[in-house]
Length: 63
Image (cartoon, rainbow, N blue to C red; front, side):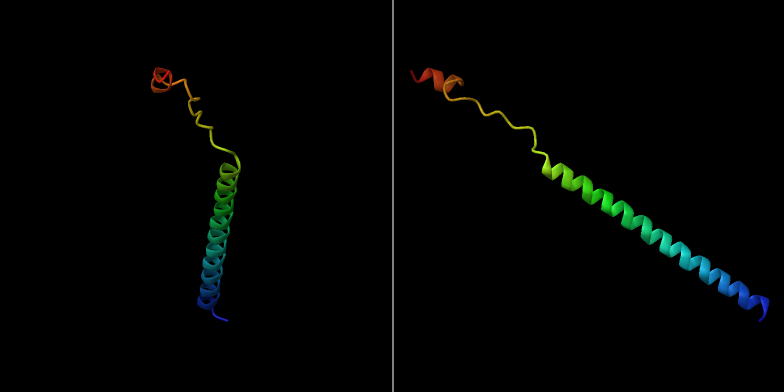
């Protein structure tokens, strides 16, 4: 086979490996993002402490 053909095969193989590596990296990063989102959704947010009845100025004024 001619050296040009081997060069073309080498370039095609290199490009294919590059694309596969890029897809694997994107897949890995996507899964990490999903895991972080699941962890954030599983943890309850800081509970907003609602004022108890009677502790606001309106509640204590209605006595």
